[in-house]
Image 1 (cartoon, rainbow, N blue to C red):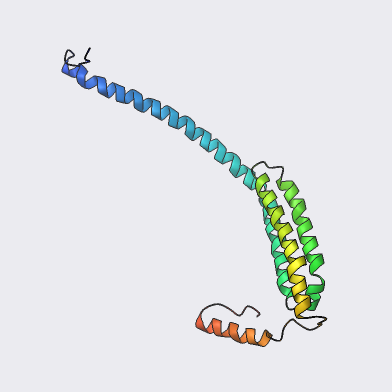
Image 2 (image 1 turned 180 degrees about the vertical axis):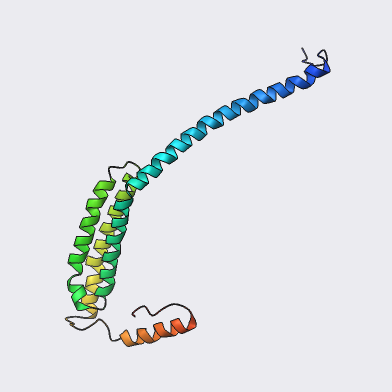
Length: 170
């Protein structure tokens, strides 16, 4: 049997599709409101979780930066090279303690494991690649690393004059 609106008045023929569209719109609005509320609550949890770990993350970044600067100075200064192991151990031990704090937050547990893996990789790089390279390149040297220091200063000055950067050595 064929469905037809011909037997309804024109007023009802216009009103019926408008009412159906209104009901569909109302249902969609209710679903979207529910989903939006869930998204807002999830966003709020993540934001407050991130704010609660802000201090630990900033300290983690500071310790990592100090370790990296110590490694850079070790390239040019024998005293910095002699203290590199201690600087790396101290900085990364502090980072491991901070990562233990961060692990209590479920949002950051996977990230803290990735940072731990990167710490282990960096420690391996310093022990297995950087220190042997420096020992091989400058055996028993008690002077600043490299006779190329003056050349690098000249090159850095040239880069600065060309607008390509600053002197990396100072």
